[in-house]
Structures are given as C-alpha cells and as structure tokens.
Length: 255
Ligand SMILES: [Zn+2]
Image (cartoon, rainbow, N blue to C red; front, side, top):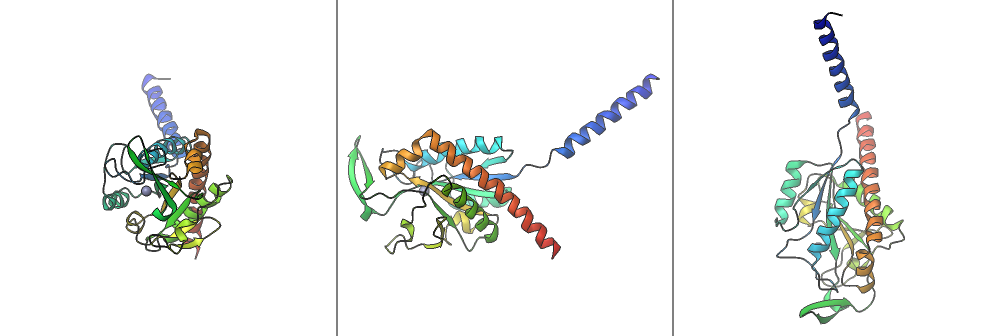
C-alpha cells in the first residue's frame, strides 16, 4: 500500500475509533452538593462539641467520592474552609444547571428538648429524650417541585431501607417547628421558604443526615460503616431519580 494511502487509512480508522469511543461515553449526570453552613457560622454544635459544618464537610467529601465512582459528575457549592451566602448557593446552582441539587446538614432540636452542659469549656447540648434519624425537606416554591419530590421520595425510601427511622420532631406543634409532613413514613417535610430550595430552578432537596445533639444518633452517624451505608443509599436514590426524571420527560414528550 502506498505510504500516503496507508496514512489516510490510519487517520480515518483513528477518527472512527475516536467517534465510537465518544458516542459510547454518554454525558455524566451532574449533581451539586451543598455542604450546609460556613466555617465561621458552623450551625448546630454536637454533643461532642463539634460544629455541624465539620460533619457536613466530612460527609460531602465521602459522598463525592462514592458518586464519582457511580459515574456522576460532582460539584460543590463550597470547599471546606470556604464561606458562601445562601443566596449565592442558589445562584451557583442556577448558573451551573446540574441535574440534581442536594443540601447536606446535620440536625439539632429545640432548646426545650435539650440539656445544657459544658465540655472542654464549650457550652454544648444533649437531648433529654431520644431524638434520632434523618429528615428530608422540599419546597413547593421550587421551579421543579415534581422532580424534587421524586428525589426526596427516593432518598427517604433508600434511607429507611437501612432500618433508619425518620425523625418526626420538626412536625411538632411548638415554636420553631410545625413543619408540614408531606410523607410521614419517608420523613419528608414541606419547607417552602428555604432559600437553597426555593430559589433553585433545578430539582433540589435538603437532607438532615442525623441528630448530632443526641448521644445515640451522633454515635450512629459518626460510625464509618453507617456513613458508607447512608452514602450508598444516597447514591442509589440519585441514580433512581435520574432514571425517573428521564422517564417522566419521555412521557411528557409523548403527550
Ligand atoms: Zn444545618
């Protein structure tokens, strides 16, 4: 074969091979994780004297790894040590336009349910009675409420399958709570005014992973094994939500 022809064949087969590789490589779903609070305003303080922001950052880092392994592209609203206001988180979500937005938090309870004590010269709190489990929040004002609702249900389903109960204390008729439970079994609450849920124009959910002022629940969420289980549940829930959104889009196109 003349050298020029051989070169052409080689180039062409390279192009075809590249095209095939590109076509097989479908775009990755994008998830924006939002580790709650900021270093200087760290949210709740745990029974061990650790601020919520540290739990949120640690969980977000481990969840990022697991989602990447499951072929998600992961973005974060802030890195550990960085601060970002609530509105800017929603604005970032609206400019990045990910497929899913998940705000990660660790929970506390109202003061009437807490005993105050001192630990290493810090004032910390512990629950008077057991308050444990996860909570999920959605906003009716979110532009894609149906998909947010789907994501919330998948999260609740997969987390409750671990044998973990939703904590229902946010629905109590006391000041600071009184949230409407949209699904008591799955632990999904309505919280319309939450900035990161209301202002985002993409499917958005806020998850309280566990109650860090409760001795048992803080121990539960601090266990590496339990973290892995919860993380796998969230990964599964994210995958199922992506599937569900694809299906509902296709159905809409058919009508
Ligand atoms: Zn929080």
